[in-house]
Length: 611
Image (cartoon, rainbow, N blue to C red; front, side, top):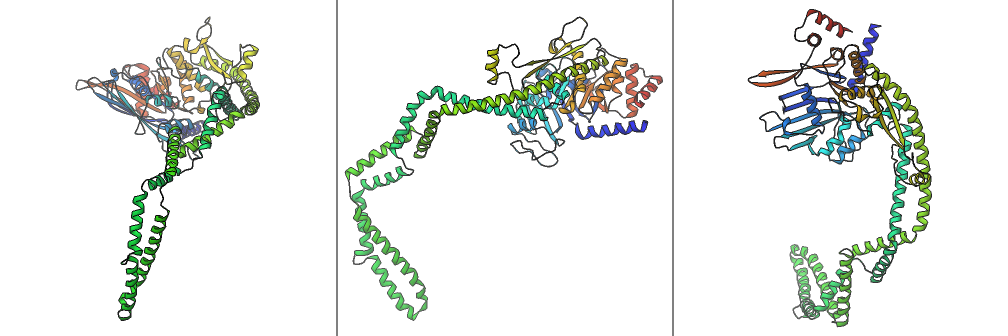
């Protein structure tokens, strides 16, 4: 039996190593009491322990700042002008993360090949790990820079990435739990209805189809509202452009003809003079070339060297003859016509006016004509098109609501089981009197029949996640009414509640690094043991980082780190060390008894680790 338990432990640890490694390294410089500090984290449960005030919370605060927390210059080490926080994350492939990064021009890489800028993974396995380096550079002036994989990034991108990387729960920092948007996610994870499940995918597809048709219908109605204003304008512009019968290149051809008419006399003189020199004059070039050809033929009889030039001269003679005839024909056709010149001037003026009016070129004017004709056809047939779109929209709306109501029924059924499981879990962490309730408000509740009809024909209050708005209600004490979670849970309660929710829900649906800062406040003994067991359970699907003062929790650590604060050369120095088994015994003994460690405390610590 003991061997089987050890084997099970090793298998779970290997699974954590392969699937849940998130934050690998945190590198700090000039942050609060820290000069330089590198902390390496491992899969599973990472525990930070140390004396009160040793600097454990500084590490958690620095991680919070790295993922988008508010920065103030007081966080810098005294006397430092600059500092930085850097984190190395190994992220399980997530299409949402890839799209966020690709939209900002940031690449994420794995052991194979980088993602494209369009965020396509090329068929990556869901277990593929991608390296992500986030660096935040801080200055005493209050300005800071953010880099993701060595590319400058915005603070809003960091905030958008945060839910997929780190979830911090501690002293006043419940980022996820107090946001009702995440409550639906937790309920769906418990019910096996997260994105990717068959039923959720059908709702998403139905919503996309409904949205597309709604957009088309709204565009058509917009055309309808302005069609009477557009109709006359479009008809006039189409008639004007069709009547003009523009042709691509026409303006260039007319410009050439215009220049020829304006310079008839000069062109006539040039062409006739060139024709005479080539063909008609007594010493015309063509006649002299022909004579030279004859002379070379005779010379070739005596010296073969000259025969090679004869073919070239015959080609030149043919070119000169062709040019001469072209000059003669050109000269014969030259004739000045004031009527034709006026016609060309008018046509060019008309073309120039249309070009200015419709885009600057004949090509742009013709494109405007085509668009106007299409728009006119759309407006003239809008009644038939609207009827067809309304028919399709009614079908899509009916299909969406059928699928969404099926999803709603599954959520309501799961909510009751979820409430019972959470209350049982809360009792195990010293919250015996806590009550927990899942309230599901469905689009359409508390509406009149007419309001419901109007809403069901549109997209109000519905989304790709269905028709439900989920919010958790909570009461920690007897006699208190249930209130929205964000209004009643204190820091310690919220941490334990989140721990319970994460372990009850299927946390592997959204793995990330989950941080609990002093989750053990106000508890001890048996309750601490239960909290430690829940942390261990959660660490099977998520990397967990926990700051604790309880040895009953610390004994569950996969990676036990101790934080120490020393004074060296008049300056306070914070350091972090990973503990081996012997060092862990000493640290657990210190946590059990305080500054003076006894042999009995060491024995107790060894028993805790052994079990």
